[in-house]
Image: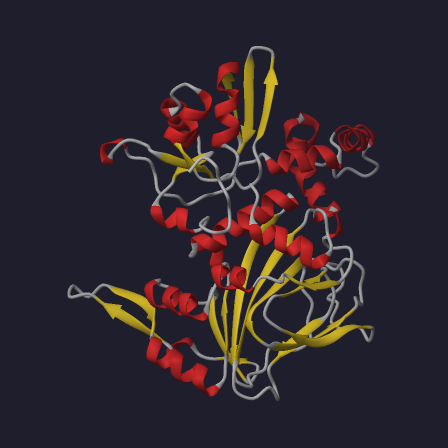
Length: 398
């Protein structure tokens, strides 16, 4: 999948791939104003808030560095039968934003197809899980105090301006669960300045930073923070602790007797570490099943006409003699070798109209597409989902 946002981030930061992600601070500009409005605007964010049943912690508002009580901008929409659904009170929200506030929407990729597709493209690119949080700050509202994140972030300034300060780390590679709370900010200045529309900034894990509009006067700032949660040595050891249960010796109770001989157990642990490498873990991680939410294919509603691959990471498609093996989303599926060209198109990451695929490969692909949907590798391409690709992902199959 070739996504314009991924290309823009690479060009802005001078990268040619994800290898420098998490290694160094970087800044640049995408140089394409139209791309910014395609990703997100304030009107679209307000529309999402109005139409969705959002609630904290995914939807929060801050003033003067303190969280505003949800009761001030949420209301219950009550049906004639007394059923209650929490909804944003848009008039109250508007009033608070007029006063000056910071609105945070976590994991917007779960509510908006454009952000969903962007995060999937970044996952295929980086080989790591990605989510996006969006920050709207109005007038002279302050942001969070100096802090650090336990993941790498790429920030895209979509509209307006915001002042930033970035400092170095005070603890190498800090983690959310760690042996040290890492509460003392570093004194090493890395960069301070104003982020303007189109600016992109990469802040590695553990770098201290803060952002504010204090002293900026009237106006607003809208930026998206894409968070990349990378695998660590601790992640590998956690994976090993799960794998060890396969072997009987690790399932037995520990012997509490004084002077108990644990040599066999320790040797088995050493052998497990030697046999199951970090590379094995990374490969398995990318092909495991992750929970997804997509419109199901219901034949009663009509024939399947278009699909798109929705796996968290790029599927592996390997030819083995007269068969083709597809590995993705916790599945290993075998197809005949004749299906290879169609599989590459259907699992390429872009929207695929089945008639266009059939015209390209010269045979019917409906049954093949239905199988991929049934196995959770593809989803029916609804108009709403298709909108997430429009103008951002080019597909010759639609």
